[in-house]
Amino acid sequence: MDANPERLVDFHTHSHYSDGVLSPAALVERARGRNVGTLALTDHDTVAGLAEARAACDAAGMRFVAGVELSAQWRGQAIHLVGLEVDTTHAGFNAHLDGVLERRRARLAEIGDRLERKARLPGRELATLASRSTSPTRLHLARLLVERGHAKDTQDAFDRWLNKDGAGHVPAEWPAFADAMAVLRDSGALPVLAHPHRYRLSAGGLRELVAAFVQAGGVALEASMAGMSPNDADRIASLCRRFQLLASMGSDFHDPSVPWNPLGRWLKLAAGLEPVTQRLTSPAR
Ligand code: AMP
Ligand code: MN
Ligand code: MN
Ligand code: MN
Image (cartoon, rainbow, N blue to C red):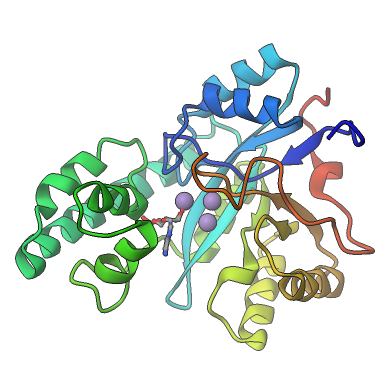
């Protein structure tokens, strides 16, 4: 780190307002300690942590980017859209978030119900506990299943109980991709397609998703993420070039006890890719 004093950027992180485990202030403190100079907080479907994160970044002399990670549906698949520089005062944007949080709570309740009926687990109790988060996710439930000894780790909890074929599988019904894109655009946020390498799509399917994203006003792909393979990075870099999209980069940090995606970690950007940083208007530091 001493040999490279340049401060890092991270445009994809979570706090306990969604499925991260740190408070926004603790997240910022940890980022500062890892030499992150520009930080976006991008909680799932909520902006509740942004004010606290902004105040902490201001106090720490870091550049803050107000963000969100929206859940959306495209051809039956859950797709995540990061919005950078979101306007937390925009009525349509806030109404959209309220609708998604309502769906999240209803989905968790239904998952809890199924776990109770089909697997005889204390599903209703765990769903109630998980729903205490502003933006409750299946990861909250997975952590509780681990805590209570029903899975060995969160991946096992997803595999055993929550994913397809699990007793608690409830398909998500997120807002349509086009609607989520429209709300980002209309509220003045920069739309970024989150972790395109992680979707279960063929090469042609991914190309069609990216084309739809461009059509709807998308500006960047997450082209460099912690944990991305060099092969994935190549595929996404090609899509950036082909569609003339900028590159965003981040860790998707949730939890300090997960070792592979610490704050500020991502692969070096492939040749010819331009970072989304150039489109940001929030004050630099
Ligand atoms: P949800 O948005 O409620 O479906 O919850 C999904 C969240 O769980 C994602 O944002 C991930 O952070 C997390 N997660 C962790 N492991 C898995 C997994 N194996 N499958 C799906 N989601 C996972
Ligand atoms: Mn998450
Ligand atoms: Mn995501
Ligand atoms: Mn994320």
